[in-house]
Image (cartoon, rainbow, N blue to C red; front, side):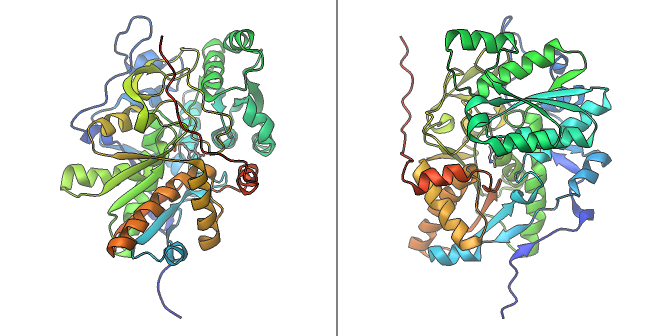
Length: 445
Ligand SMILES: *Cc1c(COP(=O)(O)O)cnc(C)c1O
């Protein structure tokens, strides 16, 4: 038997003590959010009605490179961190590639994805400032489930608006949220003004992350001691996710390698930023030349086909205007799209980094994504989340290039979650019901 190592772990004592704030090291800082009515640049205080105060300050922090992880949060991280860094020997063999492929396995969290990394600190900061209720939106249910659990850990009540089509098609995620005691409402609903307006205009609206965000924000701003939380897109969410890359950095050291390419799927950017930013800091500060690739679905291609401009984060236009790559806040991806990652915009940090060519983006058709996910499952044993399949597809593209050139590049990708509750999407793929949908920009008149 060979003594090669398959998985690299860190002891609990080496769980990061600080999150990495890349804003401090960016030469071109992200532009600031603007107030939708006055168009003025916003300050942390302007977001106090919506988010916990500490999170508002983290959102705008462009100076502190390291932000301490509270002891209570680190205690909760111990329930599933460190997550393993895995050498994908099985996938390398299946591809016959000379590349060395590693993945960070975030699917081992109790919720099956990376989202808990931010749900825990968000619930903690809310509790610490006397908040009693938290609200949010969820699409596939990964974020809602994570928030529901984190809220329970800190004794908060959680109300989750779930995109209606997911509420109907993914009943187990709803049951998971209910298991942790959350109240779950399909969106758009008649329980908010935003929901009523949407349903009046479009009675059979299937819901989108945009409609659900509008409803959750409205609930938070009209209910005392209630704060809104968000599982992606915002800079403080990505900040919390840097535990992924900080651990991976130490684990790659244990493996005696350093990544030439870092890849993650891209919805709003939190798992991509989470694994990338700690390595990107060495490009910025130490002259490393690692490439960073965000893999987005071809049916929702804001990074590869969107425009960089100020846009709303939600469909109804309640949120601040954010400077980002966007397909327009009214954009809803085709229902035929089964792979998640349906959000119309991108986080402001990754948007600025892409504009400055410090990172790259590729789009992946859903059939290629599920081909890659199935190959990965057969080679490595883990059934990936449909979202994660996009990262695997992009990693396979890079590994195939190495096969042609014979290079032994080190490829690291983030396995953002497992797909065990997403088997209806795999069923559609196996039944041949998935088609590739190409994005058409909406006509402007
Ligand atoms: C939410 C989610 C994503 C996309 O969100 P990001 O903020 O872009 O990371 C990707 N993978 C899984 C498993 C998710 O639950």
